[in-house]
Length: 348
Image 1 (cartoon, rainbow, N blue to C red):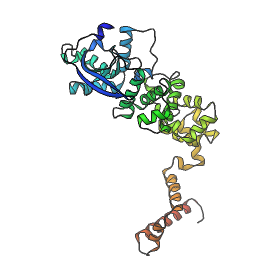
Image 2 (cartoon, helix red, strand yellow):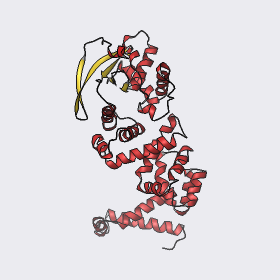
Image 3 (cartoon, rainbow, N blue to C red):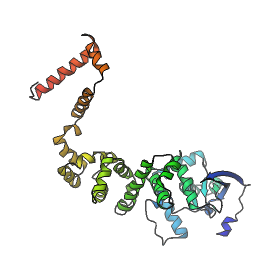
Image 4 (tube, helix red, strand yellow):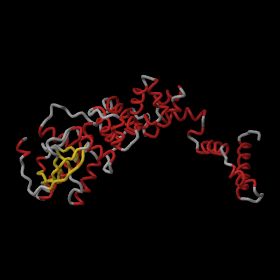
């Protein structure tokens, strides 16, 4: 490994200074030989998605990591962008041992471009920022949080939550500290940590794979809702039931989780959800509440609530004159409602 650290760059060093956790840190801008850069098994796109066997090491581990990242459609899109741009917009960041702490996907893209364009010199070396020897994992976690969670270069929601979780669990940052550093509310930090915990430790072990990580929005919605948080707190089987509903596609979209509070109030609806899915549960609920799946009844409920809360300014606009537009709109509504009641066989 010492050989790598003593590698002399092809060009003079350019030194930048960044601040990490209150400390000034100098990093070197270098173009490293691509073969020196190693992919990091702790990269969020890998570590939070699949368990890489600890028996693999060296070239075998590197090839597996490369294949896993290459399966991601986002990485293939990045490949096209880098090819069109003929290079990187931002340098990768590497440890002194040349492990990429930031830029694993870009490293894979360079490897694939070198495979395709074997004699093109631009894909033989990769622009990098080399961290100093004395930087620790905690500082690196803070750096990645600033870049990918709080910054504009964001990870996916799942990767972001995974990093917040790691900052809290592995590096003992309090939720208040994380909220301040990443410029988000403490409640949001707590929501991400809880959502990631359930997904990582209860969902992915039973439903692994790249497609499963795209279901993070389901778990985010679970802990976003006060009613569902109360359900989880009061029912020790709630999390396992939710995991099964998501894993067996009973809740195909994250937005469907928002309907769970209403479903949980009906045993028949819960049974329909467990056996057939969200559509069946909606059908059960709609028998008692047609506003759930009928635009007409939903708008009637909304209009009823709006009329109950009518402001005096609007009421005065109807009162002012017989020929006013506001009065005609109100009269048309009255006639339409009367006609509807008549068709329904309801006396006015």
